[in-house]
Length: 119
Image (cartoon, rainbow, N blue to C red):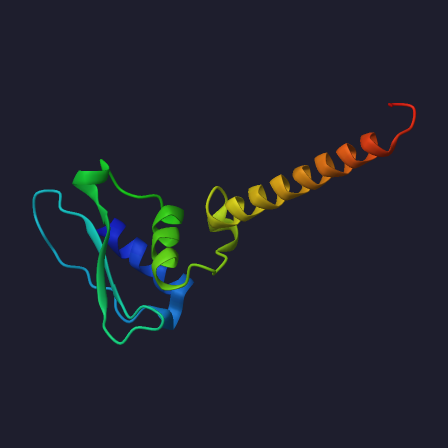
């Protein structure tokens, strides 16, 4: 119960008014599921999504993983700052690094073609 309350507080502090409700529903038998009901952008119908199931996933989520899962549903372009390390922002950084490497490789190839000494 304490873990569920902690996750709820973290999600509310991160997403504020973007989340309509966080409900804690007492259960027995180790049940811990995180559902998100939201109105997707450009849609007129709400959508319900199971984000996490302790039994299926084999445990409880890390807070940053739960935040990423919620973000990916309600606002995929949102940067979560320190909660995104190894997540959304890291993927952007990796893609940018690959773009730079490709540009450098292309530039080096062009220089080799233009070099008279190499011919």
